[in-house]
Length: 516
Image (cartoon, rainbow, N blue to C red; front, top):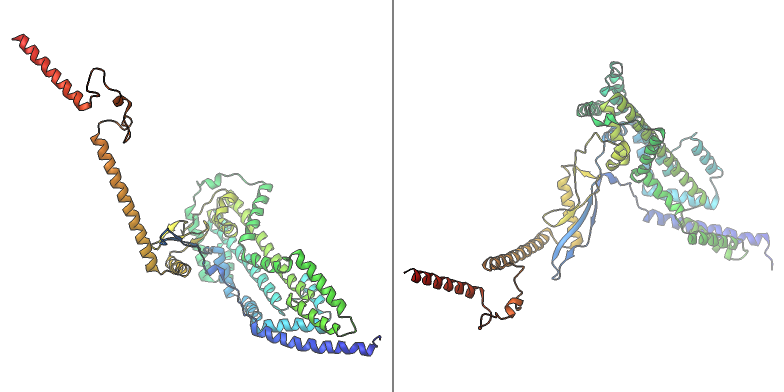
């Protein structure tokens, strides 16, 4: 029998009630199991990797290999930008909102709103309106985690460009030999003080003066030719490509976007089949309809929510990526442009500062390749590969990763703890194993030394050269054949010497007798 519209509506109302009950249970579970994951400051933490220790046949510990990647020391520009952000009230406002939306109850509330909108569509046309506001940047509202991170990123990028511009102008004034341009030092100093404060501005001024004294007019960097348009374009492209692997913001955005587009074809096909099947089943006039709607609701929430919510989050990530890419492009352009101006005007402060900007963006190993000549040397101590401590732990680091002297002791303690956790052996046990290994090596060396000394003594006692000496247990061909003049067989060297001595004596006696 066909169902009437009234009978058809009953399962729908029942489906809504069931969906609401499951929605409440889903929200409670989210509130219990959601974790407040704060963004980690990877620039302050070392990455420790411990390899499996090698052991000999007796099971003794030979060595433990530890790879320590120490964060790179921030440059002058990074320090100035961080000071400017710490002084900015707007940056503090955005930081508070980002922390707010990272809390447990805010995450649970956001997921609950998405689930309610999926069931009741209470947002209406607001999502499409928000899309337009974000694309045209007409309205900036702190209404979600994505919007807070986007506005925070835009403010940081704008602050970084402002600090870079003021610092570039100050460096040009400090190292300039033109009196008119040098007179602009006060105005550029005032601009930088407004952003970073008097203490940080004076520190930057001291750095510029120090660089001016380090590089003189006879430096070979001034002898290089100017770049062509194509060469400069390629250098800027190299810097931007290097930033893709080094910039923390770009890496964070790419990692988050890959959660949406990093699916396999099997997953995409399965998603289409499941949603289509459940959608068709939800139109059935039987009890299958509410069950299908509940299943579709849970499947949609488990895969990240409704598609319009996913696209809105991706749009905010796109705005962050566009903002950061624009800053990287402008920074690289300014660094290369003012570097050429510094070469023409022989401005050492501006030249060195441009090099630090290129180094901060692309890495120390890329500076000679991009600029051709480096005028600054790294001042910090590099942790080289293959250095061994008392416990046999090898410390290795990337060439562009450096560690301050103050952090060296802390890094060694971290390495020792990491080795102990991995190997299960304390520092004393590893020291005893290494000492036993060392004593075995010394004993082996002494035994080999005694054997060599014995061989040398044997060679000195035997006048026959090693080339003509027969092997032990063998007879030389000359000794194997008996002497034709001697009936007793072969004559040894000592016998031949005695015979020759007796013959000479008999000859001398005969001569004396004839003389008498």
